[in-house]
Image 1 (cartoon, rainbow, N blue to C red):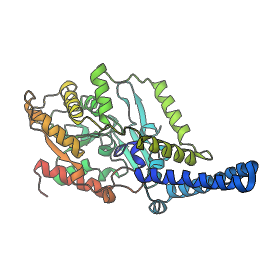
Image 2: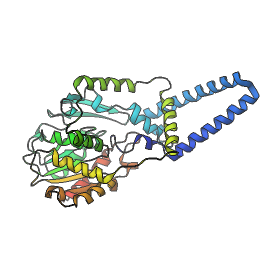
Image 3: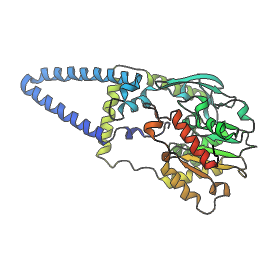
Image 4: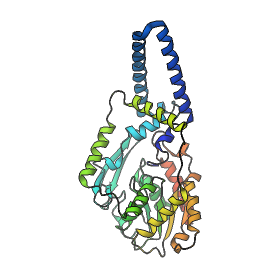
Length: 369
């Protein structure tokens, strides 16, 4: 999940540190032997030559793995996945055919039709006039609105395979998929204010840990960052440049990951998330932004396990309105197996994962099928 399931520095575990240290040790031994036997000039040539050979070999292996997931499966660790998710893949909110600037929300999906593809999928998006991946009929008095980021939007799956669509299909409710890639809860609720809530029975909020920064910023400042059209276009231009290949790109990234991992391994380490604060910030967004009456509407939050536990404790605190205290929680870590329900390269759910998630939400809704 967008982005989404692991931080950049978590992509290289302790085993990567061990490999990096071993590689440095072997290199030191080889250089020492070369200096003894060949002298300084030949040793420099020896180092440069072997560095070039290793770099070319690494570039070829990574390029093949990014094109063919079956090759990536043979490579241990998460290096290839890191390269794919942060250096290689297409990102829908920066694709000109699929996204458009919005003065208040930074961007929405571009109304119309576009094709979004990466190594493991190719999907056609049908986008309504509100900039959401759903049809026009769904905008008229939906009974269920699904908000969230790329997971809710259905990154990597077909339109009729998203967990929102499956809820509609299995439960018979009229569902609007309002998920947009990389939206935090603040933008999701601002988008909700643009929609028809007159017949809303369920609001399903899919939450990711990376929502916290946007939510905290909105509460501190009272508004989203003011990213005007020219700045958004500059972001797209930078994104396009960053995706371009140049000789040694993957070698450079591998070296950076190894150095970062070693530094992280021998320093204080990750302080982790303050989950109670994160849960409280989420609830403050729900109390502050939506301009709708939640009476008669059940809120369902779909989120990682540690967050759902923190949220469960927070909503039990006195002072919250009934629609907060009675919200239902779905821990997606408890029902999803990421080895089965996520793509090999991409960090998003596949169609089977969406079906499992839909069934978990339906169970909370009390729907039998």
